[in-house]
Image (tube, rainbow, N blue to C red; front, side, top):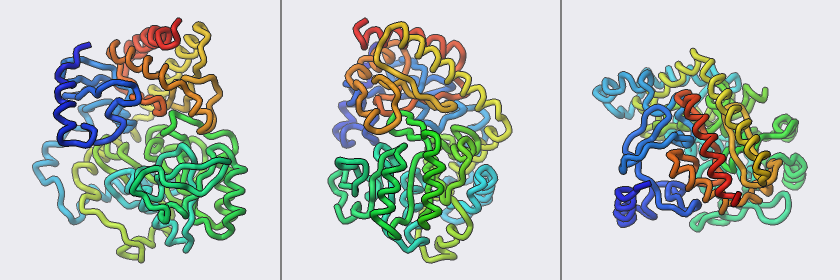
Length: 431
């Protein structure tokens, strides 16, 4: 596959942008390639500057549930632009968006718009600490909540430990109040609360861990988190930047039947435009400025472009529940097809799927924890990725990311993908 123009652009980009990319995973380093540069996208396909076409299973990392450049979603965006791209003062569409989110999530009485998932989780933690008058938070190894300082931590040895900085530039004093537990292990959470009695402000978690592939909560795990936070006077923060409006219209909370104290949303609510939000119970949210003491602001928060696109996107999903059924049907087709290939080739690989989210792990299953994920053979995944790319299929350029489907994917896309998956897996495993 010819990528001459992409290679030239990458060399030029490296002169002006650190690493030539504006987000690390785009560099394709973990799969041993230079990145492709995209010119346009439509439906289930994405097109690079060299004229190559790919079936896209990245979908901008989740938000494009309706596919690229859906006509119904982008229709009228030119008129919105002509009316102004940013006002710095309120506009009616912000109220429309807030109503949609509140109506979709019973646990959310009020919501505050921000500009990214990172901003949402960062703000939610500040709010939780202020509401509880406590400093410490619990997060889980392998769960990513954006790049704010207090959440860029990793665990040491053992099931539970205080975090140490994952990145230079993050002071140890910042993460000393962050406790890292093991996803799907309630014993580690109980120990964290016992060792920090009365000091834990919140537990923040991904109800489906979507940043170490796709790791599904075991039976009782979310219920256990809900119970222990209530017992200990801590808040439960559900990071639904990936799952909110993607797993179902009511997100993971609808699927698993729980209510968080604070919920974080990301770019899905803007159909791919830069946007985020966090919301929760009224008594918690009323602590935010200007009616409360907790300060958080943003000039572009609730900007008319993102709100316009978001309202159109959410209304389409709300009024067409069959979209979710169709996406899950395709995900099941891929899961069953991959499992058949794995059995036929007798290879150490497994598939995790929940609703329309799935991941192919290059390790013998089951994959339930961060340690399980880290057993994956990333070299084999790199071979798989390169073979799929050469076949005109764009997979996530890292083993530890989920596959995303859209309503724009077709039966033909799925059938072709499975045919090429078999070829690529045979190559990766030397069969």
